Image (tube, rainbow, N blue to C red):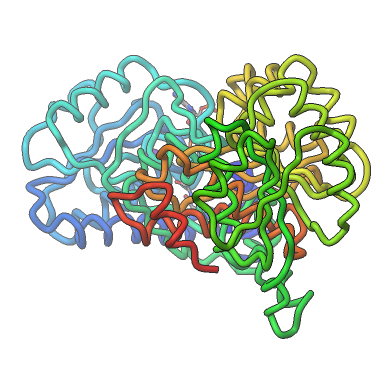
Length: 482
Ligand SMILES: NC(=O)C1=CN([C@@H]2O[C@H](COP(=O)(O)OP(=O)(O)OC[C@H]3O[C@@H](n4cnc5c(N)ncnc54)[C@H](OP(=O)(O)O)[C@@H]3O)[C@@H](O)[C@H]2O)[C@@H](O)CC1
Ligand SMILES: [K+]
């Protein structure tokens, strides 16, 4: 579950209304931080708390008090020498026995462990040069940083860096993860994340849960078991994958093999006559069909058992792709690679074709391809990857799989999931073709488009983990296990 940073203050206010004082939450937060510091850094020569003006700083003062009480050597440096901005933080400051010095007086030294309590959910603008310089100095001196709630400088909503950001070894966050801790680059700045329970009632957390989720099997398993009590319905389904010309057939075969491996009962590659020999030489279980032009396509489409299609991998960019896609407008379609690029001069033509009915188009762009279909959305740097994918999904009435190390899946109804199980070595040639094939396979088996996309991205990541570091697209296919 995720919560947005804006929900933090609302949760606090609701807790107070329910009789749980804000200071009790802050005390619990400070305890969790102090405990993590002692547990993970027993060798620290001194702990250095950097305290900001708000409640994040308040958590830092509580942690400083507890660390001092435990006998640790502890220093506190304050961003501002003015009284803290909130009542709870002022109380935490007043109860902290360690005198706080101005931040400018801090000279990092070997053996320090920094507790970053400058800003959390309330980060409102870029960090000042003073803080950015300190971050650089800590990095130069390899001083370990434990961040309170989120590394200061990371936007909890988008994961973007506001000017500069701490690179924490560990982060102790509260209540639930924020999107900016799962999206890049925020995720990388958090290090190991620990979620501390601080006494917020479950019903309140549920009330404020973000519609954006971390991608995981709960998203589709409930759906799948509701549709099929036996859970085995998806062992059938017929998938069609389009091949490009004779010299570009590898990509469609990867998609087709992945489709088969992901459980489609029947997978057919449809390609031009010039590509038949190349495809035939490499295929056993996958069927082949000659489809040169629109007439043959229309004839093939008479077969209503064909539950989904993949078009794009190795297909070639141009009018033929556009024409085929338009012919598929009332069918389930995964549009990838060249299929996406083919619409760069007139994306509206694609969106219009799929504008009605339940979403049955899955688009699988990486950032470059995304920019070709949604140039204005891609250009707005302020909005998060989640918001980009959501805006695109609404416009296209499609499921968007915006690929990357933090792939985001969004539907036109606003549902959204951030994927986090993909290993770095999954970014290899042909990996996207495999993903498109898994998507097509699951749609052919009867999954709805959003659930398909979430499941496909997750199973693709799992296959990557199983295949390990030496992964090739072929080995990835053989590790698909659904
Ligand atoms: N329920 C929970 O989860 C609980 C959460 N808790 C904790 O509360 C934290 C959120 O606290 P928070 O709302 O007070 O915000 P916080 O991050 O301390 O910063 C706000 C201050 O910083 C200032 N400021 C902002 N950006 C700045 C910049 N770049 N440079 C300089 N100044 C800047 C801003 O100034 P302003 O914009 O108002 O001028 C304001 O004064 C949360 O992260 C967690 O640690 C726990 O205590 C218990 C329960
Ligand atoms: K922080």
